[in-house]
Image (tube, rainbow, N blue to C red):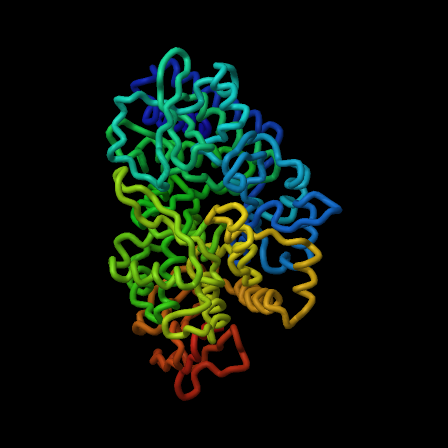
Length: 573
């Protein structure tokens, strides 16, 4: 009965996506194909739960973030993870490990293979036995040098009719762009002139989801990933999936319906999975991907990184406080994925409607002084705006107008991560951030790609040597962040769905309360966002609470004092 009810839901969603282009017979046929995929998977896989709790923390990495001549990259990473990261993280996000022609893996040539130098599916399966594995479904586009596109040009399967072409009458004047290159590429094919759609680069050709075969293909890819141990799916660039003449071609109804469909299918699989949408957009648009608790399980907390960095650079938490107060608590079993750094840059679109123009300009100027490059997007096919700042978090926080020599660089760095780790949701730390990696200027000089400043790859011998030296920069950052993660794992009030309440203590402090699901534990996270001591006035009832970051310091004897850029986690138990 339950499965029958969900079949009706699948049919309903398919109608919302494809009517009137598909008739009822075609929709029924498509639904039957989807049901068969689910049934085949469930027949071969027993039920498996995915436990998410305060112990859940995610490390973001490339499959080849660590290299050695002896083994495949994923095997090298696994050895490093067991030795150094296993006690802090129980989830790993491997960025695209597929054969790719550009964009560090995001121009996928074959979704069913793993790049040989990185590893193979048995490596992923092995890691998934002891950790949650997250992988990308690069769903919006595919490589111009991959099998699908080669077949598209020959009208062969798989790939025939997979890619989006439009004619000269297609109105793109309202299209929202994430890049500044030319969107359309004229191509003479099949005895007519058409234009290929390229949202992200000339090498990344957009797929045409108006063709149901493309949707079906990605459902199969998702199930293939589950079969190989992946249980968390990052839907890359999902907001741009559906295009319609004369619209902004972003966040369209059909895109949301496709996310709903993937969520429903994932719910019907015996192996429990999580879908996370990657939508680097203004806050309201990003939040829309929770749907009515029927779209993404998780969404990236895209506004947090720029607002956090802004607060520390200008020693002013006003914007951060205002945003935190308005941010809704996620519904139970939905979650924010919190992060500061990623393989890309610090997105600026999430600050729209939050930072005013002057504050944004001051922010960009400061980031430029700290070594940032900038990637741009076109607005209405004319002017350009900064889309993201390409800089490591270490360099972003290294110096400020009030600290031009970087006296407090480590304090700012640790405090920013303490906030991110304790904030409502699941914390995710980019691999290079664990070691305070600075901009990789050498790689940037070679490639000219702005994003490469934050995509450094380590040798196993080098990073191991650095960590063995307790006085090295890498070891100091690793020890400090590791300590926070270790403490976090033991606090019920840091469950992803533990209630969060903002406490506004003025523009020099950022404070919020977390309350465990069983209401037994409450933690006050309070951070000094300035370079001078702060003496916040909290309710006297907190006088007996302990600072779990540093238990040796009595939290509130006479008055509470926070040193420059210090964080305290005050717990009632």
